[in-house]
Length: 174
Image (cartoon, rainbow, N blue to C red; front, side, top):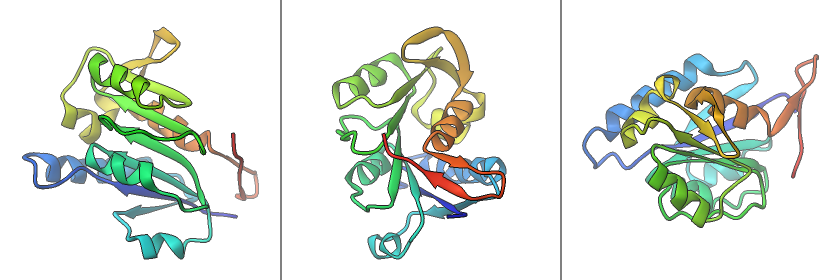
């Protein structure tokens, strides 16, 4: 494989500010993307079925529900950003980002994941999604080491695969 699909499901755009937050996250991801990534925004189920290379799915708020429900065999990782009350099995590595401590505790109660990020200090729900590079926090298990939500997000994506020197993407399961 020489490609990794980054499939993104944004928040429900009916809510105030979400459309702009989705656009800002899309811009951030385009800037941060690796050469072997193909970013696919809000694909249909039929569109996902035609992908024959590995997928890391990212979902924000309501989009986290869609990511948790994905059963496509090529999904190698799931990232839930502020997925309140969203249960996600650990069939593949699951990573979660929370904008505050209450959301973090909710993530723990609904299946946890391989790694969890919690904003510290707390930020607004939309801020975590729209500007992850500006949000600082800690990873569960090491509250002393601060990092940005963007660094956590990128590390979560890259931890699901290995990129060889020749550009080949090798995936692995937990």
